[in-house]
Image (cartoon, rainbow, N blue to C red; front, side, top):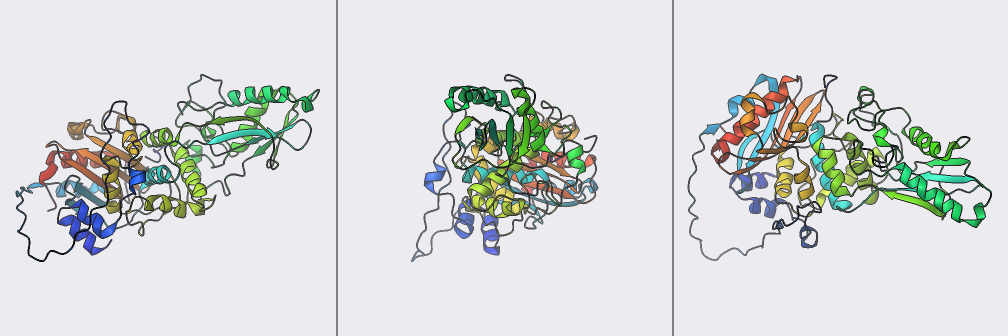
Amino acid sequence: MVRRRTLAVASGVTAALLAGSWSAAYALSAHPAPAARATAASAVQPAGQVARTPVTDPTPTRTPTTTPAPRVRQALARNCSISAAARDPRLASFQGRVVDDASGEVLFDRRGAVASRTASVLKLLTTAAALEVLGPDHRFTTTVVKGSKPGQIVLVGGGDVTLSRTPVGTTTAYAGAPHLATLVAQVKKAWAADPANRGQRITQIVLDSSYFGGPSWQPTWHDQDRIDGYMPRITALMVDGDRDVPSAPVSYRGLDPVGRAGAAFAAYFGPGVTTVRGTAPAHAARLGLVRSQPVSTLVQQTLIVSDNTIAEALARETAIVSGAGDRFTDEQQGTVTGLQGYGIDTSALRIVDGSGLSDDNAVPPTYLTRLLHLVRLRVGSLGAIYDGLPVSGRTGSLSYSDRFQGAAARADGAVHAKTGWIDTGYTLAGVIHAKDGTPLVFAFYALGHVTESTKAALDELTADAWACGSHLSNR
């Protein structure tokens, strides 16, 4: 889910998949992540859990000199169809793909190779790229340094959108977020300890948000999403995701996140303190520092309720750290750079933001099922994504009162998937633990003229796939 209405590549690869082998597909289309990257257990893996065996490169084999005996496989009855459900008019223009994740066999495909807008399902790509480029332990940092004038300090934003203006101990939309109050205490202590500041109080605060380049609003977004409380202007310095109400996931966002953060910070230093915009002097003495939760935690926080603000921060940080740049226009290169580490062809991807809010993003369902295969196996740090996926009828955006109800309730607890919604489409992609025990990976898009009822249609289709399991037919 990006937001709710005010109520709320090659033919050879395809052939390999159809032949029923993930390994064959990888041999043709990809080199899975290097062993050094793939061996680390997820930072959020539950205590005592045995690490999953990561996917490794298939060992190349020479062409045999003799014809091998044909492999005998037990024939499965493909007699369970979801084709009628996929033609439900509530799904508008439908695309989808379902793969048996144990064998790699494509069980169902409707225009799965066509790259289309994804809504918030794009966050799967954003978070996967961030985990690859930044690593699960990376944290965003907010600092305060001494200014170039007497009585001046500089608040330097480092892209942490979770930083809170509320008192320490207050629950906000972001569990475990750092607080301005902690930073203020450090600054006051360091200021008082410096003999050069004797008799000089802090009188001016410079607000440095230069870490992210402009503009602060992606041109294809609708300003109504800011007003409705789903997306702030994206700046490197803000507090509480620039929400009017820090504890509310959906809350009006303002026009000046930097100004809101500066005013909240200045209030801790008493009357008469002014704020100006600028940048920190080179090699300035540091007076304080606070850090965000690690990326592995931020990944789960953005996925479970589809938080757009964290997703945008992750996409921008990924672009910066990868060397692509610090603007929206650099997020394509940054995200793709990260995703290339997973060995899946990225040539069909178009990335214009990190949240999926734009209609101009484009990802084929085929790409998503391949990425979700690695997520399910917890390759590298991708277990953080699996752990953050909403669960049907149980957690996050799949536990809302309008999801997996009625006929779809039979798949309660069996679907771990990312939701998505923009005005022009609903999407759902993830892992199905089918009724017969078969693990399925899937991506479903309902694009065009969609309504609130489209969510129910997607859930019912997903539940049908759950019921079919390994007997799912492409007919």
